[in-house]
Image (cartoon, rainbow, N blue to C red; front, side, top):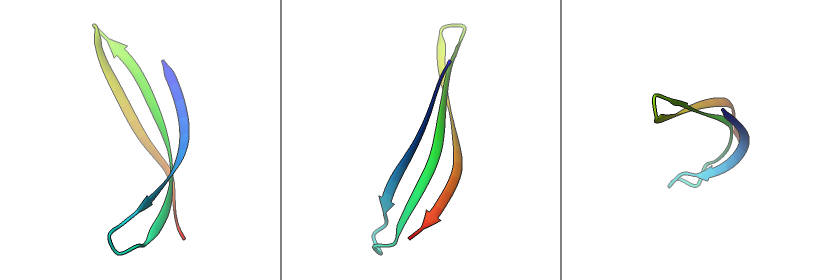
Length: 45
């Protein structure tokens, strides 16, 4: 299992900016890979 925490900056077409803090959890089950995305925080600038 891999646990990655990242922060990304997204810009919408209206030019509103938001910082999104998220965690990706990757695991394998019976040879299939699953990725869970957990959004921890959204900060509007």
